[in-house]
Length: 295
Image 1 (cartoon, rainbow, N blue to C red):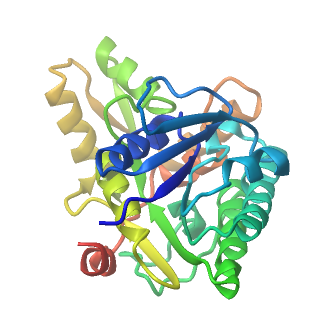
Image 2: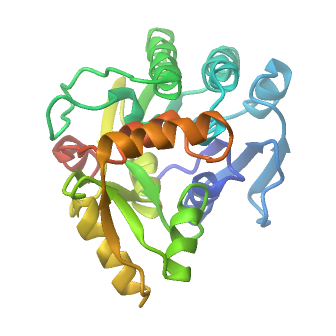
């Protein structure tokens, strides 16, 4: 395998740091670009602190780079359309400009399943048309369009759409769930909790992104776990694994969604519109294209 110089934007974050470690294990030289310093050192690792919204910072990070893995994003928990537009969408424009000017060969963009909103049919396939239902998903989808145009400039582009990412150290919105289970509190599901919900492990997603960097032209990959179940079964399995006294209980779907949206709007809950939109809905990918193309 050719050893390349690889840039990971958002490399100090949860998933970005996993990706950095995997790339180093494969012998690549890695540049981590993030607002924060990455929390480990390696002889082939360079850490650059900068803002994805600053062209000078991004151009500096892209100097001499062969492959870019783009992970910088304001996540749904930010609940701020202005940030979604400036960081997610604006950052895509700036990174695209820097990739062209610096002669980057390949870009892998970690997008989101939020580009599909609530899918009309499951499984979501590679032919399912995206239909974002809130600001975060819209910004992610618009960013995909920006990166797709790089193919006309001779840059290989792979768009990777992961289902909800889990893995060791994953907190954020999941910290609330883990605390409830640790404390033995009841865990709500909407309705009976029989909606089918797919996740993806961060380690598997990292492998998929690295494999996607070997694809030529424009490619789109939907990435998710091959084994999954209903929200109720998933949460009950987690409670059992944690040996907790928590119980999974059903709540009225429409009332719960209204409550989630209200408490989010007034700042009492960290949940964003995407969380209340999808928690009680089924969504899972057909991953056959990714399995065939990426192994």
